[in-house]
Image (tube, rainbow, N blue to C red; front, side, top):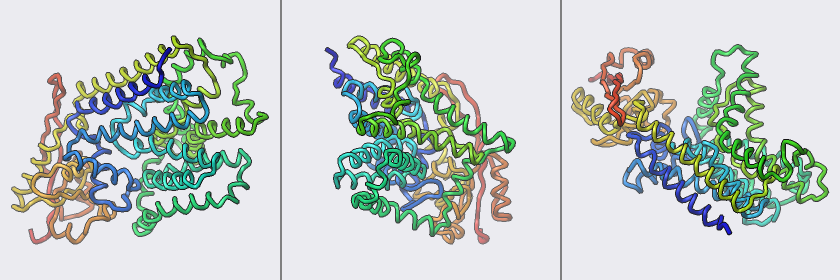
Length: 498
């Protein structure tokens, strides 16, 4: 007799430890992670890129561990683990215990839950918030308890405070309710309005912050989704295919694994008999119909909405925006394409999923060992000490502002050794509304750029205020001694009295 629940616990623990340790091979935190910590340090109710929730979590956690970089990899895995637990809880509403566990394990064949999860950012936080929202929605929808509606409202608000695309999940809920023909019943339910009010209260301060700052964050969204140089007509075809294809690629290990097991152990033999999805609208049992509709909406609608937006607008959707959209794929496969596992098959399945996790970890480890990438092999504290010394030599005053490149600006904010350094990202006061522009103008800033053209752009932005660029040469070395050099450009933004 296989004790699958015990195996599941060991699997989750091993995965947590593995992905908390593997990134320690990196010498520097990922850029998004550094950015999240800085947001938590300086930004109360908003940033000019994302809502503030990830920063609220990142900065205190980093401080709690004594500003140890490894804490951020642990934090990422906490959110992965929390998300997986709620995927299991949600799957358990529709599947027997063994199938719910196996459906959850199948999620680890999606790269978002392994290779891509080490970089703490809004996407990793979404891995937990989406299944949590879905779970409490289903509990509230089916049991109609005040506590479930309360938790649903709070989590919807937090999800929107984490990333705006959390609204896509609300579209999925709406389509489900309409398809299940319960819209009138919900409209008459006072608990629904209670949940809506709770969610609005959670996000209201952020909406006010956006209003005060001219909705600057939406410029980032439109900039990231710009279609580049592809001819107008083809954009409407290329970008939806690119986004949808990326999701299939990232989920390929899970999909291929399930396809192989279905061929051997499938009940209906998917490739020979009609898929149960085709019959969900004619099911006699309302409960079964609701379950089928809900799983289908959670699994299909988020990816479909992104794809449809690309199709209609001709704008690109970044593949990573699909990060949380696949949370229901494992459950959907087990529910709609059922497989009957015996003890031997269960053992094989666990071994295969463990194998995928190990392969992902080996790939990441090799990347850390072999790469000479700036983002992996920069010694952040050494770089910041060099920048502080350049400023000290020039001004004989402590460095308080670093303007320009996001990588070096946030690095200086996190690892400064001679006092607090504030990052003026992209040298744009509008993009950094939490800082006092008059204080910035009075005290000046060290200007840092990765490319000479980038530095010249800052000089054009502030003519006659920024000195000509100088260079620092960084040596980037991998674990086998291979080296490359990288020049960074720096100069000084000084007030006229200096």
